[in-house]
Amino acid sequence: DPRELAADHIAALAQMMADLKAMAEEINGGGEAYPAGIRSVARDVAQGCESHAMTLQSIIGRLS
Image 1 (cartoon, rainbow, N blue to C red):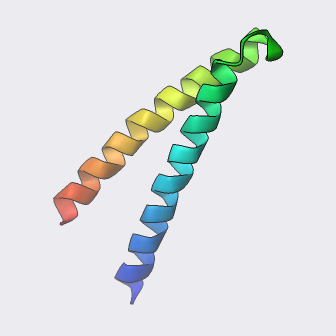
Image 2 (cartoon, rainbow, N blue to C red; image 1 turned 90 degrees about the horizontal axis):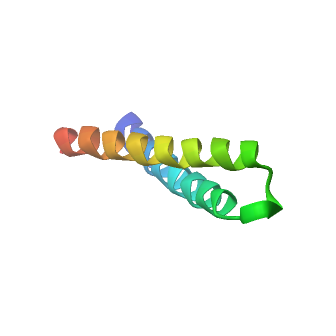
Image 3 (tube, helix red, strand yellow; image 1 turned 135 degrees about the horizontal axis):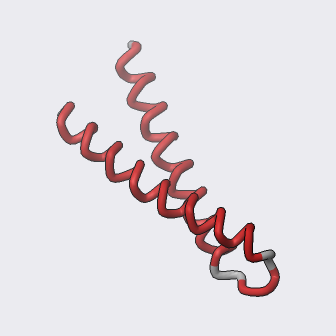
């Protein structure tokens, strides 16, 4: 069923976004081990993942 496959993909996307956010937060909080530019990108990625995850959940909520 295409809808089941879509639901699986959406769940996988949400998990990947959560994993990426966690890694980006680790890098951003890694202090001098990471160059400032990398920490800045990681901070932006983490914020973007959080924003996109909220949007994803909102859309999923409307579909239910």
